[in-house]
Image (tube, rainbow, N blue to C red; front, side, top):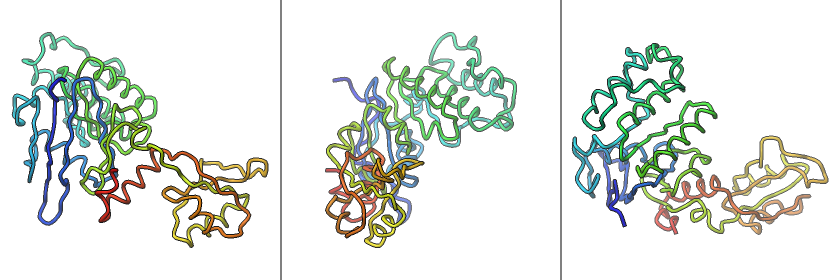
Length: 310
């Protein structure tokens, strides 16, 4: 089995009395796309910064390419931070040229590389004057300039339109297929499905890991169908159950059974007791990744976090 490109073992990071990352272990190997899935504040960015050696660990250990993080190991990494890491007063072309020159010893023949076609229109425009989506695409191109062995991407598609997002993920897949490893942070469930496997973080801890199928497993979600869905929703909320409409435009056609309310984390029996004699139908369906994620996040934020990963 090949040696991991990056790994951390029981890593923690404490800021005063606040524990941002709590005993996290993970590894990424060649050709893998590992997704760090978590809500804002879950510890994803802090973990990335420790992997880079930009933040010291409070406990545990980090290794890049089998060694502690160093300037030499960081030369083999492409990093896209949330803040993009571009110079606002340089043009897109100048930013890419600067990155190319910094890593000139890493790969030969970079001096003649042109600005990628999708960015040609903005090549001579200062970063401060381009739309966020364009700047993010440029930052992604910059992270790939030196053909890194490991990509660390922190929310790479934030502010990017759906078409550009799809193209970025195609590039991520191509990078992994060339034997590079990728660690990407996200809270987008569609993007999570593009990853080889996921590490789900909540309150700085790992609450689940594995493929989407492994994380969702055989979890079920209670579904309530009613022509008078607002009344059903009030009953569920009165019983302390969180329900969401299934879809953005639910049908109220009697033939379809009315609008569907999904109640993640609750059994059909709990829901049936909550709605009592109301004119509704109650069933169960396979849970979605999003529903499982919220269930894990809620459990991970409380004292039962350790049991949630099971």
